Length: 433
Ligand code: UGA
Image 1 (tube, helix red, strand yellow):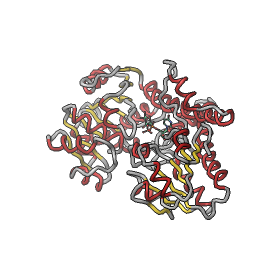
Image 2 (image 1 turned 90 degrees about the vertical axis):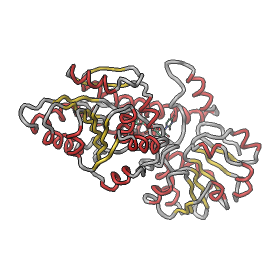
Image 3 (image 1 turned 135 degrees about the horizontal axis):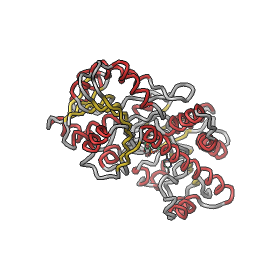
Image 4 (image 1 turned 90 degrees about the horizontal axis):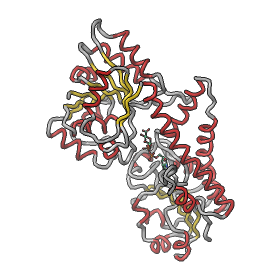
């Protein structure tokens, strides 16, 4: 099938690449000329495991190419995916200006029937807005259908999640569009949920809000564990065996970050407000998440007493492992708060240092974890990259000024750390000192 994907960010790029891999004739578009030139030369704009190989293979086999000319992409396709950004406004509401602009461009360009699919995370009723914009601007007699097909991929596992999704949601009010979408996703084995457009849009916001709430719930439980002397890892394990609960997303830590949960929770609160519903549960989800970072900084302050003259080593900057994404990373707040107290920061991250340099100032970026440990008064673990789980703990102890770790991701076993002679403080577990 001839498919175009407008917007080549995480969602658009993964979608375009996987649809090409499935055998379609795909054009990926983006207004960022530099990004497109790089992509056509096999240079990836983001770090995403497996993406580069797949893009290169599909470009070589002529199933995939990229353009900065949206019109060229629109003319090429029978199915047009809109995957442009939906950033938050200062009020927390979703800014739909990019979606609206693309909808208008599609309307002005198309000359025959198209299925127009919005994949970006959008407020309920955006489908109708897109229908209206296209309807008002399209040439007379040209038919089209709008479909909501939300994306559920995670950064770091974007390709795998797109190839093997838990479900595919298709929101449409036309049988013809549903049949075309079924054909697009035919090669992917996953439950297909066919629904109206509004329900599809809500499935996405409700899913992200639920997952964020699950994280805030376990973070709240972690506080009770600290106060009562229980162990949140054991509590999560015990809860997780219940099939109605499950263990995933019950990892206590320094709170969720990234470009999805923080903005989508805020947007969903706003959407609810606009319908006249006060979504108190989600407000608490947000508040607990903010508190989690503050409590972590408080732990550092309580442990070090005087931060002013201390050298603080940071392991992990990205909002989660296997990505270089620093957007809404808890590390940014934590580092900036410690710098306000006068701390000297040394930091290492396997992928995010370049991006961190444009956000954070006055940091000594190191080439590896051991360089961070040299002369450090304390080590803070902020992202659970696998390589941090395999560090030589004895070597770390010999390099640090004090054997003191505060682990914001609970990656080490407190008893083991105690045996190695560390003072080890983590989240929702007993401190060993
Ligand atoms: C999230 C959703 O998981 C995807 O399904 C969705 O498609 C995506 O948002 C989106 O809307 O585009 P992502 O932001 O890539 O994906 O990352 P997650 O793996 O969900 O992690 C989000 C944050 O939650 C991270 O900061 C992570 O450290 C934190 N987290 C996650 C926890 O603190 N505890 C957990 O148990 C799980």
